[in-house]
Image 1 (cartoon, rainbow, N blue to C red):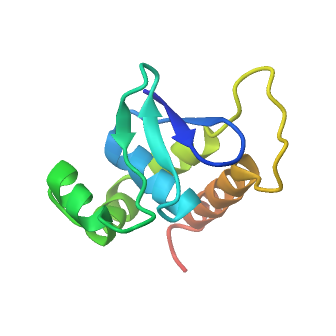
Image 2 (tube, rainbow, N blue to C red; image 1 turned 135 degrees about the horizontal axis):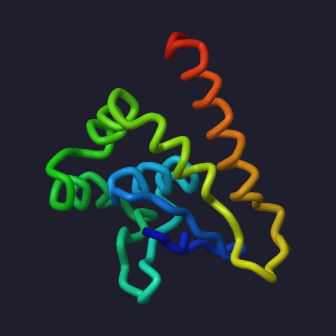
Length: 122
C-alpha cells in the first residue's frame, strides 16, 4: 500500500505491504513528527509530537513502539529496507526544503542493506 508521509516539508510517499513496517519507517524518519495517510486521505498513523505513541501502537499493533521496532528488526528487516527505499516525492515535485526526507530514507536503507549483507552482525 502507498502512504503519504505527512510532514511540514515536501510531499513524500512510501510503500509497505504491512502498516507496522510503514509505521516503524515513519517513526525512524520523523521521530514522531510525521504521520501517515492513506491514498484516500484517511489517517493511517497520527503525529506523536505531544506523545501518545505507545498508547496508539499498543491499541493498533498490540505492542509498544520499541517492541514493534525490535520485532521488525528481528523478523522483517528486508521489508523495512524496501519500505525506506520506496520513499519518494510524487512525480513533478522537486525538493524545496533543507529537510531531505528521501535522502535520509535512502541512507538508512543503505545501512540496513549493508548490515544484512554482512550477515546481520554489528
